[in-house]
Length: 175
Image (cartoon, rainbow, N blue to C red; front, top):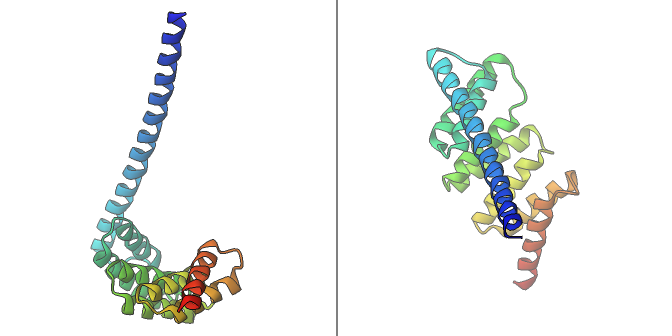
């Protein structure tokens, strides 16, 4: 009986260690892939002009590492490259740049940048959600609610917009 209990405990321990090891290895490989991409893009873009996509990708990597200043610089380079390439899908670049400003708590600049994204693509739900969030951080309830309602108009099942709009409606009703 005692041997069976020991075998069960050891088996459970081995399964837990195996699962933890798998998660650690997976994270190591993901991090390595990200770092290799970052290194490749930095050296490639440091040598000369890159494409809109390359600047955007590098900016996104910087943003994922909480390096907003560097990300903004890359997004600005992406906009310049897009102009040279005749690229028209600029809304994601403006949205990402707005998010970079948002992370630095530069809410006014973030709002302006999100609005620029929405000028280019008025049904861009992610930018509408981000705009609503920026307005919320500035305690501008009516414009925030308006942004979330526009997001819901374009994507009725948007959980973020639903949740935030309901919360703001409650705040407006109380006031």
